[in-house]
Length: 386
Ligand code: COS
Image (cartoon, rainbow, N blue to C red; front, side, top):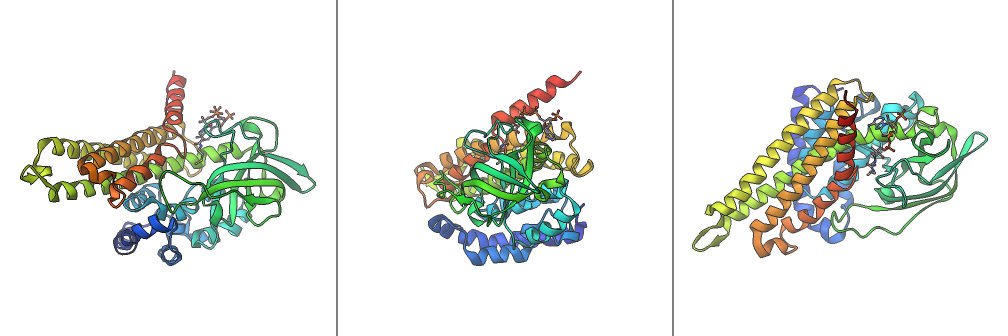
């Protein structure tokens, strides 16, 4: 699946223009309001951003992973809250249905996800199951043609906006093999949302707990219709998500570098531009070199991801997606740190963009698998080799 080169190039131009003309000017209000303005969300829908990764037959744009990463790189160059509104529809919320869903599930949900009419969240994490994703305590008990779901999900991105969740629960005993992935409409009786989380950064993104108390969900809502396959679905979705997050990290590194260069060209000390000092240039150079390395990784691994059959795991590619997430999200942390350093005291002041971006990028090293989880995946893979 991919868009032809010419149409993709037009799409990328429109996204770049949209970011420049609509999103960057709205960054301050997102920070102040802690929300993305409704008219901006409508414009994002019109541009097709919610359906980037969904095939055209279901109303999406049908980008390849490589193309999705190019768009994520662009979206990474503005406040990450904007991308977050569409992020779960593009990635972790929708992809399980696309990879493993039945024909009926795809037809019922994907067109509304692609248009942005339905926001879908990914509900895996729990109070006692974060990195150890197989240790879920949310239970699904069979009752006739339904399951009764009970438990709590934590830090669920877009939960306050969601019309449905891709939600993992234990149905067939403990451990990875007992987990099923359900499509759970958010209006069902027994679902309540926790208070909005107060986060370090990424103001404007919405996360909260999702509590389930004997929520009656038809067995037909199990993704693929077969219980016990949900852990693998979640892992496949995360493999893909990790590449998307890596592209975002590179986009954000590019923006921070641009802000840092602009400041180094304008700010004068000791009678000259601070960017004419070699110690400042060294910081800019390190950021540029690391950004190029990270972005080269994203492009290379996305190409390998596209070369394998869709929805089928290639452990080598999964391992490389983890390498890419590990490197790029740590990289953007260093770039943001240098960005603040180049700005001096101004970099610690909220009205300068680098102060916010410094806080915003901290999350990239945590969600969709911490740096340490990526190390474990890579290490385990290497030790399996003959
Ligand atoms: N694709 C498909 N299947 C996969 C897979 C992948 N990428 N990774 C693992 N699996 C399969 C394994 O092959 C295994 O299947 P079998 O039992 O048939 O052999 C099963 O899933 C269990 O795998 P494993 O034993 O490796 O699971 P662990 O419990 O050891 O956990 C990690 C593996 C640590 C990788 C997993 O728990 C993880 O990714 N944790 C982080 C979760 C995360 O990113 N959370 C963020 C929340 S979303 S923002």
